[in-house]
Image 1 (cartoon, rainbow over the protein chains, first blue to last red):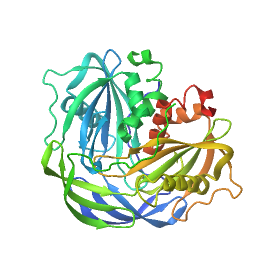
Image 2: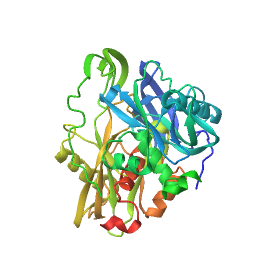
Image 3: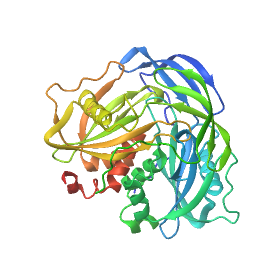
Length: 208
Length: 208
């Protein structure tokens, strides 16, 4: 099994430089810009359309029985409800481990109504870029191994609409992915990372 | 193994209605809007920040030996180069199978320098939403099983910067995912779908 330390995502990469940024639309949720950026192969710069978004964290909650907890959420941009792992945006500096874990803990309780049990542990699994062609949005991935129902249940934010919460066995999760019922990047990226890190097969390795 | 027919993504979902759309920024690459949308649990409507993007297609090219072909691409929004499956935006109606496959064929050749061999076949694997909290962007997933080098090699578009192309064994692909080196939603979502559809394990099932 491979685990990842949280870290700054980008730093000061050699050969890259921001030459100009023009903001077209600024809201609390995103900033739409046109940027001129020097890259290793294009030192004179290239013009690109970039949407800034806060970083986020996705949580894979695993019960002591090795079942996954997913939430069903209305997703306004795509006009449908989706079964997904709980997730939420991070307030604070990118790559700040304390802020990531605080957000994971909050979303696990608010969206799913679960918390880490006495024997539970957080397993950081790196991060991913949701759509690197047009946005800097990234999501950290954290497995919450050993979750139990929270005494207060779920307490979703007013702006969200979570209509159901349920556990999926490993076979149910993979079946829903195979049938295209699970179709959001957060959940799929998490499953790929869990699989690659040896946390998803064989089934009984989940409690390791 | 499970395969998917291409289909319209959204249609006319019951309980959803677009009440108002205000466009803030329109470019050839995206449209940034604020929308008022009625949802099943919020029939009076909720205001949401939505970025429109064209649909895309991601290709998992598999050689006759069962190796994957990935490209290394400069990604301006995140100021780094990433190893990814080839991908590109689709011109044409969402869910149009001919347009999806034409795009897959074009990107496979332009970005990676490969084409489907005489014994090759396309295996459609559904689609996913890259970030359903703020954009309607979706990517279709297609495995290109049995690819061979194209006589003309790679011919990347001028606006892109693909700096390398190479094959990955199954173990190399999963190792790069476990080490967070592969960290884009396209490649991770494809791997989750391949895994769930039984196309990624055991290794020798890839040529099935």
